[in-house]
Length: 352
Length: 286
Image 1 (cartoon, rainbow over the protein chains, first blue to last red):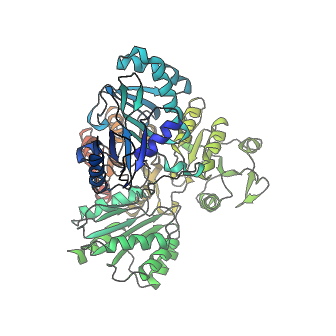
Image 2: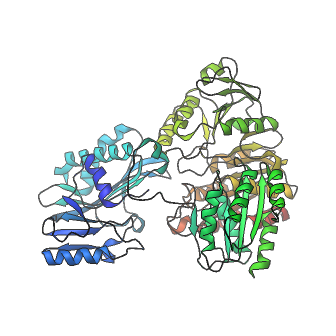
């Protein structure tokens, strides 16, 4: 779950890291203070390039900027709110983040001398791994050496400890301060912040952020695809998409219905699929392990009965309780295929 | 190193839950020796004929434990894992999914000072057809034989196994390492096991988009594996930057794509396919 900038800054601020003075605005005609910078609160990067960050020095500039940014979509996201912040006198812009590194399976602090860099674009980052909490004790000194601001050693040590605490206490998987601004007054302030929280840890937090839970399970691949796919498990769902393509058909979507496939999940999925204009077949590929095939079959029958004009279903179900599932689907006049290959061959007949 | 997958005495942590109960029955039916179940507060219950204990410590008074299979719900999984790790159970298999990443970081640290090895979390477990079933892989679709399968995905593992069984090609090992970012036993541990096991003749590696574990595995194959290795990387048509289902499957950079990984695996002498159906055809024609 990715937080908006103002939500991320509020978490940083609670942990003790300095953030610019700021207020949220919507359509207010009076600027809270001047001059200020207005920043679109959307959950994606690239705001600067899109024109979604503007400086206003007068009331008329402010009114114009609010109206411009509020109606400007950034990568498909239009803001509900803008963050109005004080302007900082910038001496230097640095990069600092903390994340869970997949390769080493450790927490890492990542730094770069140029704020504003994109992690993906540049490999010249300095890294410090945290195996034990005591490793944090040495990173402030190392950062001060790396950034070449020895007089900020103690301040950087505070920031790294606060960052680590914020990371652990909030079950974050990424906190990125980019840029970390060194002001001409000598303060270190989080100019922009990005925080990703681990959705799996939601049970132990009282999270109330604006972003809806991301649905990783339904992803559109091609709005003009001819074959929609439904599978259980991410790997099998990807493999089903690959196989559709290998059989010479254009897949429309990826869908992992997971272990607990209910009729409600499938109704939502079928409705999304029905919205694709060119879909001529729905391939359902279920391999039941911890899932019970008969429960999935029941969900398929209920969901398909509740939606009219659904493209034909090509169903393959294997695994736990397959026999019961097969009997139920036959009773409901569905054809069942033994394996994915025969299922795709049959689907191809109606698609091509 | 001792082959921990051949351990005999199995316990089930979380045996009294819905999945624990159902899968205990399935494991027993597949020939697994389950000596005890563990659920705090449920001592003296009996599940499918298996006695339940409050803790691993009380179960070990009566039995030597070789393997634990964990079905404990995610909020309590860290505690269950640490209990098994502190008991030095040689092989711990964690089926539970959606365990917070910070909990797994703690578990990883604890493993460093234990003799335990962890498979998972978010793993379907391991199936050694004809010997025993350690987890949720459906045994009915397997066939004893000489192929070894290792995969990051659950259901795609079953698909591969069932595809081989349909062609009368049996399996010695079917192992799912789990799809989470932070996990235990990886591809290389399994490849080493398969290379050393004289009963294994050919190996199948199933990968996915995201991360670089398949690349490390390919390097290991070219340096240390003499048996034929076949591979399929799922997600050739995955859009960039979007997480597909579970945590591990996200395409962050070009060299994490299915195409790039497939090319690299092929360059290291692995026989590759672009779909699971092609993989089964190639493997059975070999």
